[in-house]
Length: 354
Image 1 (tube, one colour):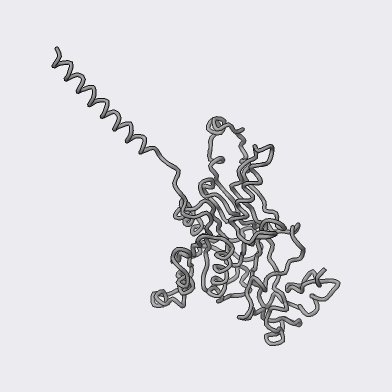
Image 2 (tube, rainbow, N blue to C red; image 1 turned 90 degrees about the vertical axis):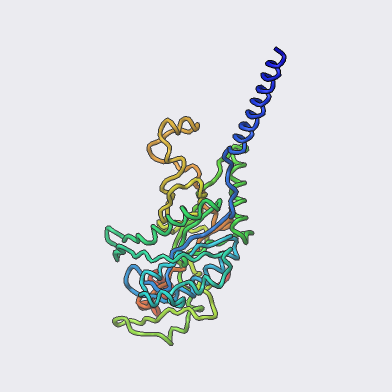
């Protein structure tokens, strides 16, 4: 009987030890929230050469623009930028091996810890011109944006997709976009007696800026006739940047006149599908009626964007859109840019200080 008891005790001891090991193993296997490598990254779809959708002009300043865009956003707090290089869609096999024909010679100037170059040879299927019912489909760009979120979104808290003629600028007392994001999060959480919401989609309004005439190359050097009126080629000299030049708005911030072409910085874990200007599918909008109620929220057929936040353009951040204008768009500039009727003027002449 004593021997049997010892055996049983031994078996029980072994079972307890085995159970302890299994329990410990299960604890270790519990999913943990992944540590994000970055706080804020940017994605852009770009090319060394491009044509405007209107067909007015073509531009080969992609390399020059991209380097300025990268420099600015790394200086203003972005941890990493991903460049989807669509130059490859327009090159033959020989040219694909020449860095000067793509954007790779620009991205190679930076550490791989800061800039990632992604060759993106996908062609645009449809890019209709003009102001018709169909504004144009830029399938290559849409696919690049989705790719960037799917491939790199898991490694960052915040992500933004925008063009290389768009600059996200800290305003007020801020010089770093990550500080702006932290400030907005803290402010919104403190609202309603500390029961505020966490902002997860941060919105920039948009309106194309005008190029400042005093920063452009002398119009007399490139003037030509448009019908019976004067035009000139709006060339940005090498000694100034696009951000300096395209820095003239019709009004001071906060701007009231904007275009329906906003851009966003969003949390990659919250936004499941982002489409150019909008967070198309979020964790909340993907829930069904029962799932929504179980999560303690009211279900509505139309998505409620509770976590959206629009930046204060004076004190937090704004977007400057430095979209290039063509020579034809300077039509009759020498007359249309004179006071008091300057509504048709497409170049910027700053008002005197004060």
